[in-house]
Image 1 (cartoon, rainbow, N blue to C red):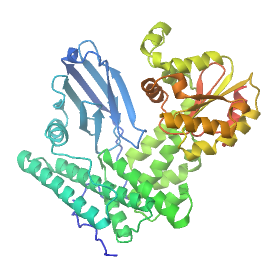
Image 2: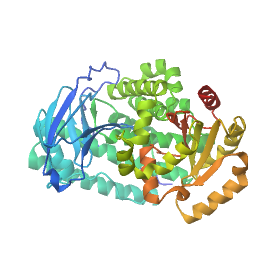
Image 3: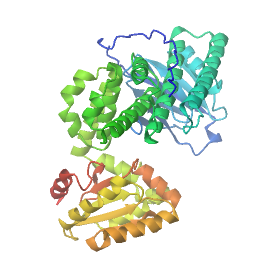
Image 4: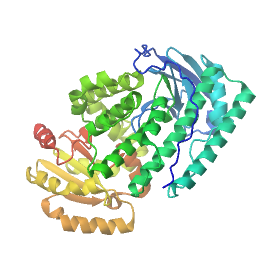
Length: 489
C-alpha cells in the first residue's frame, strides 16, 4: 500500500509551552454584564445561557434571567490564560481571561453582531468577525468518510488550504495581534486533526488498513495542540476523537474493550495524556460515579496539571458529592424546573406529566426507572440483572419501570419482541414504550429535562419522590445499586 505522509503543517510557538511548568492561578473571576436590545422582537426569550466548554455533555452552564430592562450578568472562573465561552445562540466565541470584566450587547434584530466592551474588547470584536459575523471560519469538514485514504487525504488537504486562505485574508484585512493569530491558528489545526483522526477511527471500525499513516507522528502533532494555556472549545472535541481512536485500536488489536488503564498507558504525549485522563474521570463523574475519582485522585494530581482540567474535575467531584449527600435541590430542578407552584408547573411543564403520573402511581415506594433502546447492546445486557434485582424486593416496597426510548414503529415491534423474549412483564417489571406515554416532541423534552444523554440510563427515586441517583452508575449489574436501594427502604 502506498505510504501516506502526514502533511507538514507548521506550528506556531505557543505561549507557556512547557508541559512540565507550574501553571498560574487562573481562578480569578470573570464578570460578564450585558444588555439585550429589542427584546420584544423575541418575547419568548426569557433567559440566557452561558456555556463554559468542557467534554461533551459536561459543559458548565449558567442560566440567568433577562431583567425587565434587558440587563443580565454572569460570574465564573476561566481556569485558563485565554479561552472562549459562549452565550448560547448569540455569541459563540467570547474570549475571556482571569479577572476580565466585559459588557456584551445583544441585539435581537441583529443576532450576528454582538458588541463587546471592556477588557479584551478589540480581540472579541475581531474573533466575532472571524468566527461569526464575518464568516471567515468554517468548523466542519464536509468530506465523506467512506473514501479510500488517498482520496480522503487529497480532499482534506484541499479543504484545509481553503481554511488557511480565509484566515490569511482575515489577518491581512484586520491586522489582529499575536494572540488572535495564535488562537485562530490553533483553532484551524485542531479541526484538521479532529477530522483526520475521526476518519482513521472510522476506517478501524470498517476493518480497513491504516498503516499508511504514521501514528507516532500523528500523536506527536496532536500533542502539540493540547499544550499551553490558550484553550479553544474544540480542543475537547479533539480529545474525544483521540479517545475513540485509542478505544478502536485496543479493540481491534487486542480484541477487548479498552479499560481506564489502557487509555492512560497508551503511548501518547504528556499533554494528550492529561486530556485523556480528564475525559475518562469526567465521564465517570457525569454518571454520578465518584469512586473512580477517589481511587485515582493521587494519580490524577500527578498527571493532570492543566488548570482548566484539574480545577473543573475537582469542582465536578465536589458537586457530585454534594448531590449524593443532599439530592433534593438537583432533583427538584430535574423534575420541576424553576417552578415551585403546581398550577404554574402544569402550565409550563405539562410534557412532564407521564413522569408525574409514575410518581403519583407509586407514591410512598422506592422507584427504579430503566430507560433503554432496542439497538443498545449494553441496555440488553442489563435485562437479566434487572430481573434478578426485581426478585430482591416486594412490589409494595419497590416499583421497577422499564421505558423503551426507541422511536419508530419498527422499534416498537422490536421492543415488544424483546419484552416477550426476556419475560420482563412476568418478572414484575412495569414495561412501557415511550409512545404509550407521550408523543415524540414531549418525550424529547423529557429526555432533556432528565438529562438522558445516553442509554442505558437509570433513575433511583426515594419514598419522598426525590431522585437520589441517576445515570449509568446505578445499573442493575452494579452491586452497589442493591445497597443503595436497601438504604432507601
